[in-house]
Every structure is written in C-alpha cells, then in structure tokens.
Length: 124
Picture 1: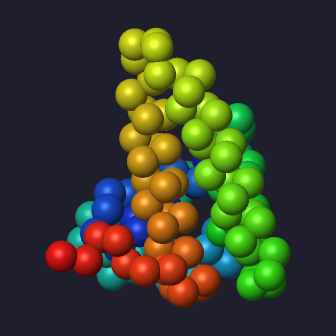
Picture 2 (picture 1 turned 90 degrees about the vertical axis):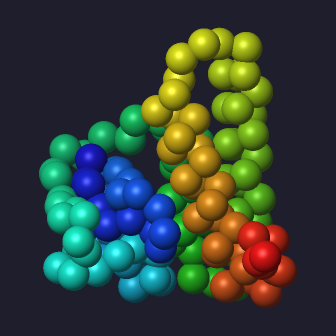
C-alpha cells in the first residue's frame, strides 16, 4: 500500500497499486504535492488493497481517461461502494473502511464535477 498525498482539503489517504497508477492519479490533480505538503505525506510500498470489494472499481474510475467510459467507471465504482455500505450497515466497527468510503465518494464527486461537468453540490 502506498501512503499518498491527500485530496485537496482532506487527510492523507492510502493507495494500493503501482507507482505508475499513483503518478496518473497525481497528474489528475487529486493529490497534494508530496514535496510541499506540510502534513509530511510519505510513500510506503506494501502493495495490498485493503477493501477489494469496491476499491478496484474506484481505482478504475480514477485512472479512466476516456470521457465516454468515465461515466460508466464512476457508476460502477459508486455501485460497488453502495453495495458494500449495505453489507456493513448493520455491523459495528468497520470505521476505517467507512472513512475510506467517505473519502472515495468525495473523490468521485470531484471527478464527476471536473471531468463530466456535474454541478458542485458542496458549494455554499
């Protein structure tokens, strides 16, 4: 797992995958500049996806560059996340996964807004 820079205005996140994928996510503007971040983000190299039930779909959405396929990827990621949320809804615990889901949904909202022209629902 790679410890990566945080999405804008959020805490640092973890990421599983190759450095090539990490670089692609950074180029899309979802991460802080690891060199400039005051939170001292760092990279660990333990490749493991902690929540494969939905994180594979989420990563596919983040990495999709084809605008026409992106809507499908985002929908697939949201579906996988919501299925997992239903599975863990009745169970206590899963706090780390719930936080990861919250972060992923925020990332998908940004992706939909910036890449697909969705409105900014968090604007005040």
